[in-house]
Image 1 (tube, helix red, strand yellow):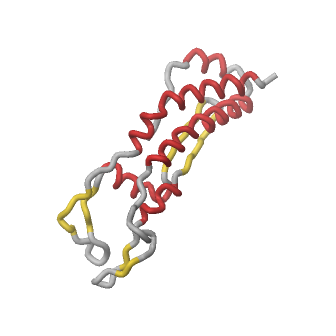
Image 2 (cartoon, rainbow, N blue to C red):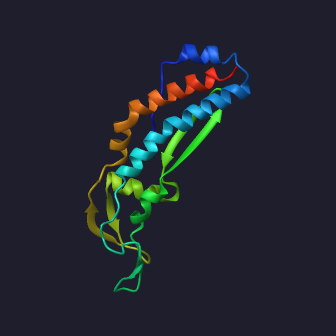
Image 3 (cartoon, rainbow, N blue to C red):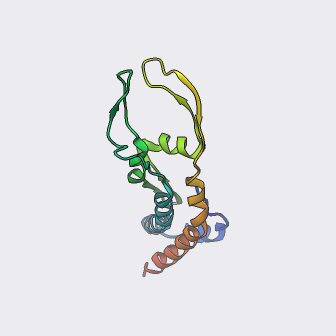
Length: 157
């Protein structure tokens, strides 16, 4: 999920006249503060299993072991900030568990585990939560970016 801020061409051309260190600091702080509402929204909407002890491995009849990883998905919500002197990117994701988040968001074909990865002939319905989380706070993220940018840039003196 990505939120893009556009329409700030004049600000960017003005800002490019500033020293590189200041640009990186201002953009970094603004991105960091603006991504926090999105991270909180995603975490609050991330489903967790209601199966008791779902995080404990269980042995199946065929001898394979299963674990309900999405029980821990909410704990995996993380942010990543990349900053250059001319811009930056802020992302909210699930790290190594991103594939599980996508399976929940969009649904998936049920496949058995090794050996064989047998198609079970069933489909797990989508449970959208990431897009809803982003839609709920998009304006807040943009406003927070602008406010933090202005505050941080104002501290340059």
